Length: 224
Image (tube, rainbow, N blue to C red; front, side):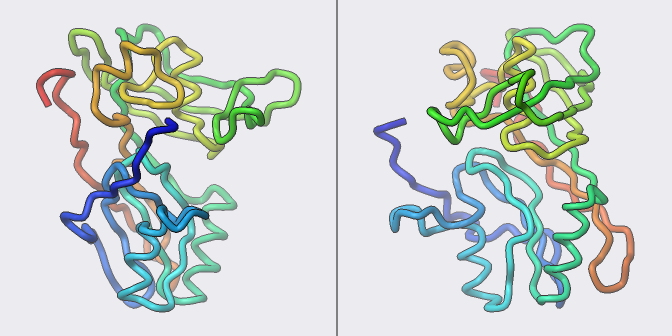
């Protein structure tokens, strides 16, 4: 990763799924940070782009730089507090899709304790002594020649949870620069992990809302 050059996609600049006076929901592309990095070279981010158009906006949750899909930001302070509470209290619901290496069999749930791999941060690792409990539900959708399309429903929200869980099961997500083996990295030009659905209660009205973004890698490897 030492020779990595940050070149976030710019077309579209912001892919807006929903906008009202309280929230903005976007389909985040792979390759852009949710929030700015510490180095000036990593200033461009979803948050900075939204902030330029909505000066009172606030980030309330994040997606990894390489992950694509649904992300919501608050546009007013009250909305920020309420959305952060919903995420903190696990009142939101998220569904991800991933294309993973190999053919997944007989796997419906992963429960493994996770902790930061401190010497190699931001990587995470499984640790049965000091890790925090984490749980992911797994549904097998279809098979490719060397891969499986899976639906992943995180019950907890640990950092890199889905990526580490699938790696630990022997099925790393294709294109994962942190956790995939050399073959799984070669099979995709990006991390094939997508936040396909996010369900929240509207922070003002309380209305139950679900936002979706189409999965960009439905086709098996080599056919995208």
